[in-house]
Length: 114
Image (cartoon, rainbow, N blue to C red; front, side):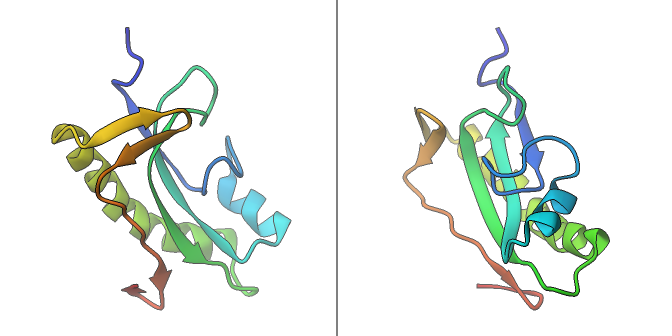
């Protein structure tokens, strides 16, 4: 009944770092790039088709809070973009991805989006 009707935003580049404390998981893993994902809610936690993702750099000096703040800035852009894609029926489901005719690539670097 609710399949493909509910979306979620998660502070990682899924499928990496599912579940709680994604930023801490990313720092512990030593990744150089993290980010956020807007996806459809599925029975599997953080397992639904991906709608939008955005990447941010991870710095060696980052605390969990530093990384979370950087990711949050991208979340504020990604979530409305995902809602727009859904509202204008611009998505086509393809397995683990919700494909759009408009490819969206975003990367946060020093306060600017490139």
